[in-house]
Amino acid sequence: MEISRSGNGAHVWCFFEVSYPAQKSRKVFLSFLRDAKCIDEYAHDESFDRLFPNQDAHSGKGLGNLIAFPLQGQSRKHDRTVFVDVDFKSYGDQ
Image 1: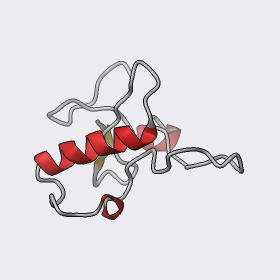
Image 2: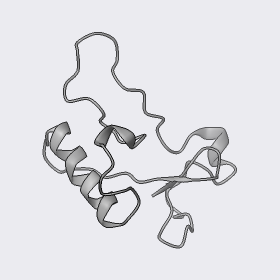
Image 3: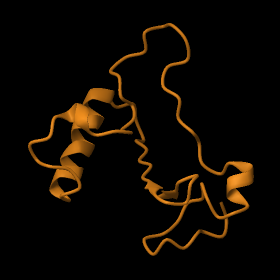
Image 4: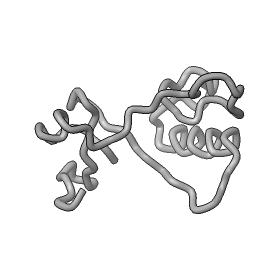
């Protein structure tokens, strides 16, 4: 989990060890969010904001989705954009 740049929220990062289709990963995580009651079980997939990747394939034009990476210099100085444990305490070695 990463504290957002504003400090008012958090982002969850999940990484796969092997290549995994974007469409399937979205379905898995939407299922997790529904089971955790974070979103309504009847909500359309498109109604959840900020779930990446949000496209199945790159069009070949431009760079694709913009994702703000964690550990950004100025924000990090204020304990933002840092990774935290379940108690929201930042890890020492980032």
